[in-house]
Image 1 (cartoon, rainbow over the protein chains, first blue to last red):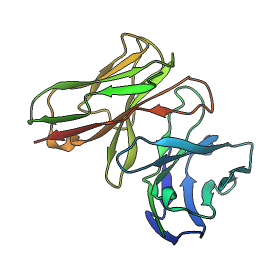
Image 2: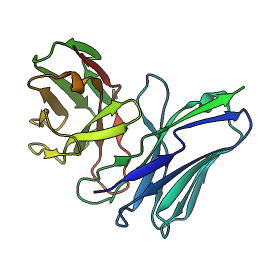
Image 3: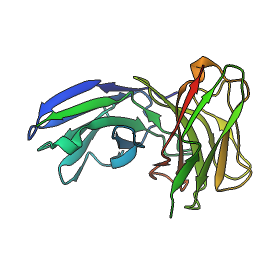
Length: 113
Length: 113
């Protein structure tokens, strides 16, 4: 089955700096890569996603890049703010059948004011 | 719309007791999923359903059973709870098409003593 590795497990940045979280996946058939944000005690919520036919997608301060050849994708957050502090999960899906998501183990991002 | 709801929010069980967690969604979604979340382990899929009357095993199905008698409800059962099942349980639903967001419920925190 699919295996998703996520790094780093914790990340601290100063407010205003950029943050980058990286994920690798094992199944070359995976074609959908969402990122979820989970604030403390809350449910995971989708913040951005990318399909395998796109190399980069941006939404305001967040962007995701995908390298299919290397089987890795990354989340970039620019101009970080204290409200960006949360746990971020990457995931991968084959996008067919049950559309199951395989999640990485998460990155706890702390933005220091 | 309430989205995805879960009942109960918290529960404490003794080893060997049984219980059922209820997930309900009002978005007419075809697909529903049960995950468990443990510290440092991300979200792991327990069971899922691709439609009313169907269920299938995910990554960590042992010790759990599920039923989807109505499209809007997905039940997760623990027949004989074990301390290893102490976790936060999240239900999710999606429309059942490619590249669709999974919407999560608020979670159930279960402690097995």
